[in-house]
Amino acid sequence: MTVSDALIARTILAGTVAEAAPARDLHSAWERDAPEPAWAERRLREAAEATGAAAPIAPPTAPPLPPAGDGPLHGLGIGALQAAYAAGATDPVALVAALKDRIARHPSGRDAVLAPVPGAEDAARESARRIREGAARPLEGIPFGIKDIVDCAGAPVTCGSRLTGDRVAEADATVVARLRAAGAIPLAMLATTEFACGSAHNPRYGAVGNPWNRARWTGGSSTGSGSALAARLMPLALGTDTGGSIRVPAAWCGITGLKPTRGLVPRTGVAPLSWTLDHVGPMARSAEDLARVMPWIAGPDGTDPHAAGRYDASRARGLAGLRVGVAEGWFTAMQDAAVLAAWQAMLTVLERGGARLVPVDLGPVATAHQDGYTIVMAELASLQEPDLDRAAALDPGTRARMDQGRHFTATDYLRALRRRPLVLTQVLDALGDVDVLVTPGLGGEAPSLDSLTVEVDGTAHPLQAVLPRNTMLFDYTGLPALMLPTGFGRTGLPVAAQVVGKPYDDALCLGVGEAFQRETGHHREAPPEAG
Image (cartoon, rainbow, N blue to C red; front, top):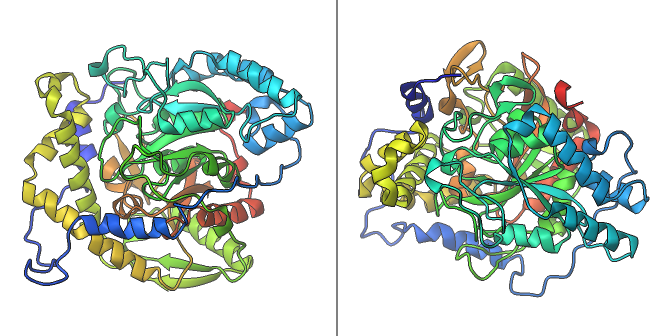
C-alpha cells in the first residue's frame, strides 16, 4: 500500500497545531501567583508523598484467582493462566511453545511482532520448576511483549527507525527488569511507530494491520502491543503513552490499557519522545489482569528523576456510592453516535451498580490539547536534533512533527509549559466532588490505512483530528487513565470508554474497570481470525 508523504504530514498534524497567540490567560510576571512550569511537577509530587512513597511497601496481596479457564492456551488471560498453572493443567513451557507457534502462523505475527526475545524457553523452564516446587513469584510464567522503544537486554531495540541500525539493548529497562524479577517472561519485541511519533506506515517495518480488519490501523504508537494482545499472541504487553499511545491501540483493538499516573512507572531504559509527557504502562485483556501487574512495576527506581509514589491497591473500591464525573462539551464533540451510545451504556451499568453520575465541567480543553502537542513536538525536535543531517531517512510523519517543533518559538514552548500547572489545578478542582471521570474513548472506529481518516457519523476526518482528542489532556496533566472496550461501532469494530482518576488513584480506575467488566463481556470478544 502506497500513501503519499503529503497525506501523512497533513493527517498527522491535523488538530494539533494552533496559531501562536499572546498568553492573555496567564498572570503577569509581577503577580504573586504567576505560574512556573515546575508547579505542575510539584503538585504531582505532593500527591506521590501522600501514597507513603518513603515508607516500606508491604508485598501486595494478589487478587483471588479466577476459575481455571478451558479452551486454547493462547486465549487465556493472566489470571486464568495463573489458575491453570496452580491446577497443574499446563505450565509455562507449554504456553511459550504454543504462543511461539501461534506467532509463526498468525498474520499479526508478521507485522506486530518484530523479533523474539532470546532466552524465553530457558525462562519458561525455570518458571515451570519454580511452580512445581511451590516457589512461584507473583507473575511466574506470564509471557509479555515489549514495545520497540523499551530496552530488553540482548534483544534488538530499534525504535522503529532506519536510523538506529541493528542496535541491541545492553540492559533491561526498569519496567522489564521488574517484570522479570516477578517471574514474567519477555517473549517478543513489538512494533511501534518511529520513535513513538511517526505515521501508521513505518518505513522500516511497514504498517501494523488491525486484527479486527487488516485494512484498518491499530492506532499508535504502541501498534504492536495492541495488535498482539487482540490477536491472542500473548497475554501482556508494555506500551508508552505521550498523547494516547497506550489508550488508542487499546480502544481500537478491543483490549484494556492503563496510562498510569505520571512517574508511577519509571521511564529508565525507555527511549524518550517527550520528557515532560512520556508515560510507561501495561496493556492486557482486562482491568483485573492489569491490577495483577501494576504492583510489581510501580515505584521510583532512583534513576528516573520524575519517578515517584507507589501503587496503592487499597484505593480500589466497589461501585456503591462511587461518584462518577460526566463531562460533555469537548469530550462528546467529534464522537460517532455509536461511540456515545456505548459510553452511555457503560454509565448505565455503573449507575445500576450503585454509582452516582455527577455532571462536571473541566473548563476549556482545546488550548491545553494544543499545548500538549506544542510540548511534544518541541521536545521531539530537540531530541532528534543530532540526526538532522539524516532527516531524509525519517518517516514523513516523524519529519513533519519534528519540522513543526523546530518552527515553534521558545515562547510558544514555555507558554505551553506555564499553562500546565493552571490546567492541572483547573482539572483537579473540577474533579473535587467526584471519585473518577468517565469519558467516551476515541471518536470512531479504527482508521483506514489507505486514507488515514476516521469516520464520525459518516464523515471522514483526518486521523489526528480525532485520535488524541480525549486522551492528550491526561498526558498533559499526568492523571491516570484507563481505556477499556465498551462494544462495537457501525462496522463491527471495537469502541471504548476511558476512566480517569486523580493522581495515584490508578487502582481506583482499575477497580471501576473491573466492576464494569464483571457485568459485561466486551473485553472477552476476540477478532474472528484470532479465534
